[in-house]
Length: 144
Image 1 (spheres, rainbow, N blue to C red):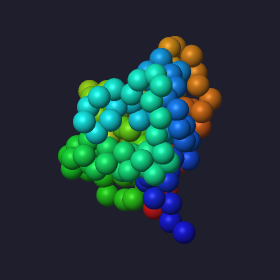
Image 2: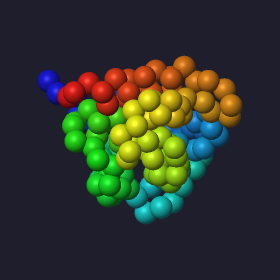
Image 3: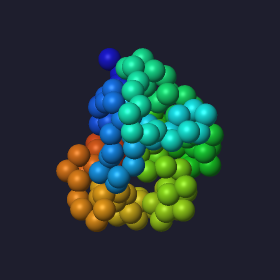
Image 4: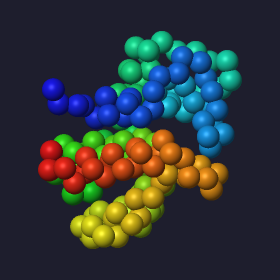
């Protein structure tokens, strides 16, 4: 069975019914969602169903990430999976202004790998983020 991009993200985000503060101190819910489709931020005390969280994740990918992908030169499913997962985690603005994004567009793979370094929160290496970034890079270069 082929793993979808949504399933790839869910594997790393996990599901949380009740709002919580992520390691970066941002209120988060469901599968790592920090804002609702109407733009309201997640706040303490919010709850969500698993299906609601799944729907919000897919809606966010379709509306907030996919429109930005056209100029990146992605060609394979693994590349889309990796970059969508990264952007979902760090946000489009951070990725768009990064050296990693510039290296991706230039197909400068050594720089792309070097700059694919979003695995810290508040200056501390987060083992879960390091595992995620490693899996994303593996998916990106998998040929899938």
